[in-house]
Length: 133
Image 1: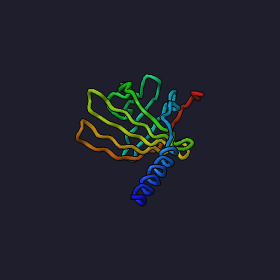
Image 2: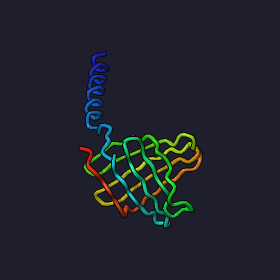
Image 3: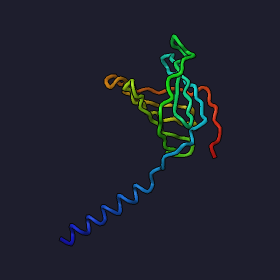
Image 4: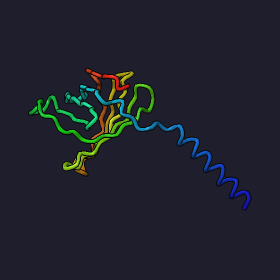
């Protein structure tokens, strides 16, 4: 019984120490506007604001049309690297982006309409960031 209790206590403290290393939710992407290109030739513009994230498909048939804003969440996982996600209520789309401003790369996955999966990387070609501090 002592061995079980000792292992249990070690497990609890080990888990707590690892959890303390996690980044807290951040709003550092607010006032950020990013343009990126996929290797397929598709180009998008995404902007993060306090009231949500919006995007437009620049190489689509209506490049001036903005989709959103959608409430979003983000972590700054390390200096200049962000993990962001949002759900597009009404469309059933769930998007997750890993944005690395250190090397201007963006990776993302999306579940569209609850059935189609996208998993792509893109080169960030333009960034406009304003400090929220």
